[in-house]
Figure (tube, rainbow, N blue to C red):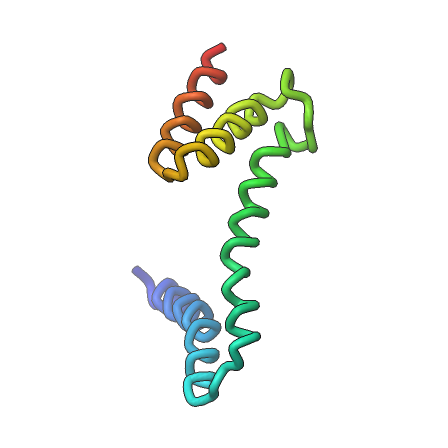
Length: 106
């Protein structure tokens, strides 16, 4: 490897590390209010929901609510039903993978 490659790798490592380290450094001695902490607890759930929703409702680059053209809609409804009935992540994932496989093969 050339020295330019090492400088590039080191620069990318620093740029990646700084956004993770600065909040820890700046907020480690401050006390966070309970309301802010409660608000922050919703962020991972909302990010996950937006990722899942964008994957389900966008098919081939466009928004689609048509079950005949968007094959992810029917398995998604099935997963919601299984998750509601069983309250089990394992059964929900199995239902999603199996139903998506079956719909993909059709």
